[in-house]
Amino acid sequence: MSKMTEETPDVYTIEMDSKNEGRAGQFYMLSVPGVGEAPISVASGFGRNLIFTIRDVGSVTSKLKNLQFVGIRGPYGTGWPWKEYDEVIGVAGGIGIPPIRSLLEEMMDSGRQQDLEVMYGARTPSDLVYKTDFGDWTKSLNFQITVDTANAEWNGNVGFVPALLRKAHLSRMAAVFVIGPPLMMINTVKEALKLGYREDRIFISLERRMECGIGVCGHCNIGEHYVCESGPIINYSRVRNDKELFL
Amino acid sequence: MNYILSKSEMESAFVAISSDFQVYGAVERDGDVIFDRVAGFDQVSEERSRYAPKEFLMKRNENVLILNVESKKAVFGIKSCDLKGFYLMDKQIFGKDPFYTQKREKTLFANFVCSEPCSGGFCSSFGGPVLDQYDLQILREGEKFHVMVSEKYDRYFREFKKETGTFYVDFSNRFNSKLEPLPVEGIEKRIKWNSELWKEYASACISCGACNFECPTCYCFDLYDDGNERKKEWDSCILSGFTSSSAGNIRKGLDERLRQRFYHKFVYFKKSKDTYLCTGCNRCVEDCPVGIDIKEVITYDYNGE
Image (cartoon, rainbow over all chains, first blue to last red; front, top):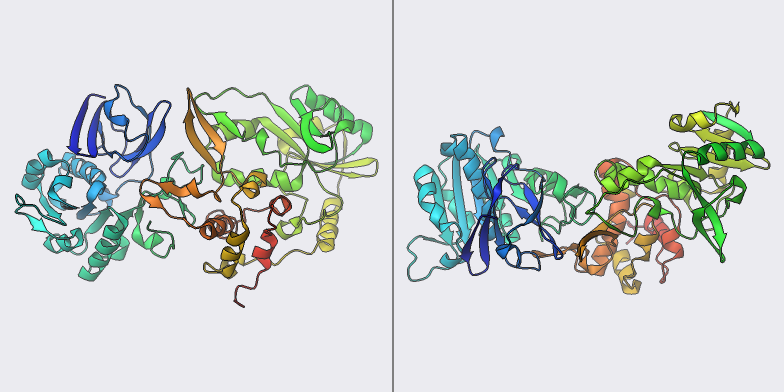
């Protein structure tokens, strides 16, 4: 590990010396020897140094912060299929932002930042991560931020993320990549459909307990799909009728 | 290729196989049939083992930080229903789980075809005891052995008498007509998400996980660190921690977890692999301490609810 940044009281970002061999949306299994493994989405673009942004919620994620060496295997799962679309809108809620950061870097590295818009929402201004990147992103693309609840210093958007979709300028043919807490994803998908985006161009990120990452251990199924294989990024129209879709 | 062998010819085939493999067989020990090393074909029991011999390919618990080179094993006397479990698991995990895959490739299974239906078993619902995939498939008829041999192991049998004709097909038809198949076809469409059955089962189930551990098709495992080892250990979808994660638990209710077990077997696996994840062995029924019967899941009148 080469760098650690405290993003919020319970979220931190770590950077490795190794390169990211995964695509935006994919995840790695990070491990602390003797404690265990946790699936973490990659936050940097393909070919850049590996970056992970982690919320301290469990036995592994509380210990990844201060290690010299981190166990790592992957990448696993599916990524955002941005290369297949002329226009992409990334919508992230809360700690769903890292895979969108990765998407942003990949599209920038391919010179396609003008085909991307990013909508990002957090509960409060102090829950926002990557604050030091905001300046660059705002210069490069339509990057919108909102918070559910403002504080005295906040003079930006206030409200839930789905509402930000109305600030998108790209066409209704754009692919919409949605990631965040279940309720945020449900409402964003609803809003996107209401605004006329195509259902078969909406992609969501699924979340389940994952242990093996290779479609064997059986913990992450949603219907006949194993999230670690068919997901985490999946076309909404493929799973919209699955009864256990959202936690 | 199919062959017909005498008892002594069976022994000489066994000897030839023994020179290339560590040989195990079903044997009686202290009143239970288990698998252990055997030195002759006549030592192999025709009784069904107390447990499905899943451990040949998936140990209850193994360290996954080291992939040991496994020795070649031959296992005589596994029953068709138990062997079929591996062919079903293969569809999901072969080639992906290196621990399972290596052992699978290095293990020869000689399955015994039951001559009569067993009490409670319902294998005819899934094709019966004559499998269409096997290494060596053996059916004893008095002093004669009918052996179906896969191409991979044909070299051990080439010197013996070939069997032509329809013996196995006729046997299979006879067997399956003695044991009437359950109406399993289409269960994936009949079964009901909100059925009362799941709540009824949940009110009795004590979450022991025996159904999973007994099942020759259940392959799910838990992965956890233990000192210097990272272990892969049999897991059970009936246990509440199975799906719990930092984001929440999708199946908090025992009724939901029981439903998942049956949906995996009869709906999800059918959708993804075009076959049911059950062999009709009845082990989960026999060892369920509260009498939950998977056969009822198949025959239940969901429309009548």
